[in-house]
Image 1: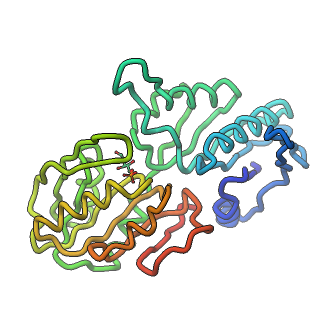
Image 2: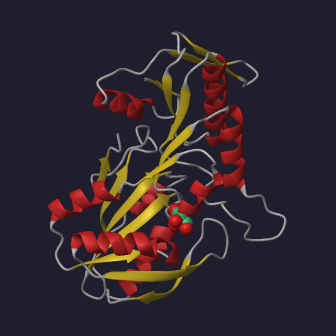
Length: 287
Ligand code: R5P
């Protein structure tokens, strides 16, 4: 097999290669002055099982296009199989129509990958697991839950309660609660607009307990701040926040540096290297 990295998260690709006792293969990725992307594999991929590591971090559309071109180049160079390793699968929050005249963007991404010739997709903690069904090829849907569990067990948090920020995350929260032998609670939220959340009520006892909030994505940080404030109103202690994908748009990092948050545990599916993270942040590698 051969592993190649796109430009979205080379640090993670290096770590993956290290775990596999290999090195990322040589591929030239350049931008023309017009913004168009140029790809050239600098070694043969003929008959190889090619693994392309590309996460959908910002600029998401460029990274997606780069991946599509990498797939096409590998296919035309006679790779035996093309495996797209997409740690953070973007557009997953648009997996169904919530209103008339909207696209199903996650399906468009799946179709694009399929059309260019991807044979397998490997991803982690899809916002909506049903997206697996958008593909008619093998799709390995991995989870960072075991990484989180291992870390949280070591922390020995006293009097914990695992909190799902909404009904959609309830199953994951229930699993984590089982692994940690802790109770769990569910927040009910509504979204007045995109990237805004307001908590309507909480199911479960949180007063006097330390919440462990389990999220898939932190984007603007707005949801987490609403959840934290809702929990504080109900008498909960400072929380530990766990999220797989640190998309961190705008001033998300500053928002999460909050007195009611004692720790933020994230993974490296989206790189945070360019950001200064406060000491309360821990990054676990999914490599
Ligand atoms: C949505 O349901 C997701 O699970 C996250 O709660 C949401 O995408 C986080 O976005 P933000 O950080 O902008 O509130």
